[in-house]
Amino acid sequence: MTGQAASARQIVLASGNPGKLAELSVLLSPLGWQVRAQSEFHLEEADEPHPTFIENALAKARHASFHTGLPALADDSGLCVDALGGLPGVRSARFAPLSDASRPQQDAANNALLLQQLGDAFSRAARFVSVIVALRHAADPEPLIAQGELIGQIGRAPLGQGGFGYDPLFVLSDGRTLAQCDAQEKNRISHRAQAMRRLLPLLQDVWGRSAAV
Image 1 (cartoon, rainbow, N blue to C red):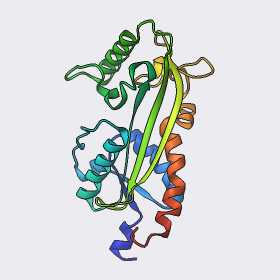
Image 2 (image 1 turned 180 degrees about the vertical axis):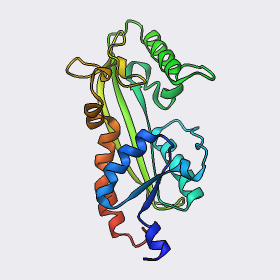
Image 3 (image 1 turned 180 degrees about the horizontal axis):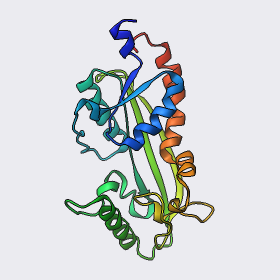
Image 4 (image 1 turned 90 degrees about the vertical axis):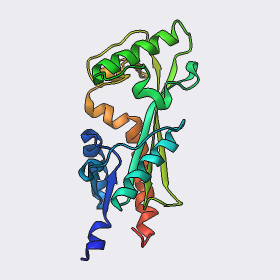
């Protein structure tokens, strides 16, 4: 096998998050793909200045592919609350304006600000949204795009000890919050898992027919 052929089944994940890497490695291994984190290549995170998940996901994937020469996979995700016009949306991770905060501190501030802005609103419908894109190369004119959603409500107080981010406030249809679900169940029903389930057949069917990958 030539060096080019050997690298053809590698794909770079536009993230250094070890949890994402492990999850996506398991999902892509049946298709013969080896997932490599962009941190292996000492890449800094791409800028995410765009107002939509799809634009930010594409920016991250193009950045990773351009600097590694490999096909790339990227996701952008967040919480969208109807009563807030879709906020926090792409600002979900940094909804509360803190600087140099730890992840738990930022999460707590984000949740507090969300509850403050919602107040006593009757409508508390919300969605966790994930958009995942895959590019064969940085200038790929036909990116593969898949979206997943998890529908719920925003509770009035945090419940549960698991998860992270907005999980203690995100109430599922059975009345539990995501923070009250175990990790295996959360990973099975999550917005990212749903997006990946939609992306996998595209990778297999579309890229499987492409001589470029």
